[in-house]
Amino acid sequence: MARSSLNISKRQGFILYNALSFQCVWWTSVLFGNSTLLLSIPLLVVHFMLLPWVETARAIPRDLSTMLKVGLLGMAIDGLLIWMGIFEFPVFPGWLACLWLHFAVSLHHSLSFIRTFAIVLQAILGGVFGCLSYLAGARLYAVNLPFGEGISVIILAVIWAILLPVFIYLSRNHRLNRQTADARLYGS
Image (cartoon, rainbow, N blue to C red):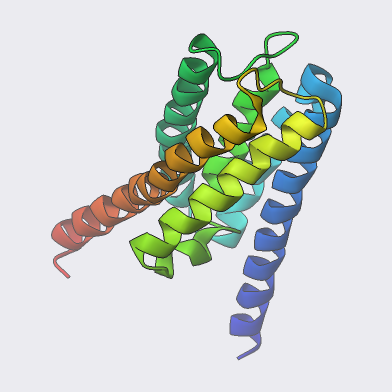
């Protein structure tokens, strides 16, 4: 019984760490730009150092895979939006790449509750909160929205309504493939 309680508290502590580190990275990145890379990268390293203590060693490749898939797709979408002139940054936003990596690992931890929602609700949440994140960044002068807030909000809401369910699928897909492979390997 005590062992079970200890695992729950470790897991809850890790989820709290994950949520706080993501928020810390978001706020410091938006407010201070590329100078926050010295904070963002070590927080990711700590994530992967703590992960086997909370889960199993198999969680490391799962989070790395999600980080690569979701992070690269997110960076590619943002790159496309920059290229199209929907976003403008005063300097190259290296901080945005780290923010994507932190968001990606949050899908298995502090944001994992979204997996249980219907895809329609995931799309609504993505459309609203994904869009609000960029709008807040613009209001804090981290990004410029040359098309204005109205058009940018519509574009970002549509993109994020599609992206959040895709990101959840990409993170879930690896987990399902790993479980299926384990079941085949161990005959369960």
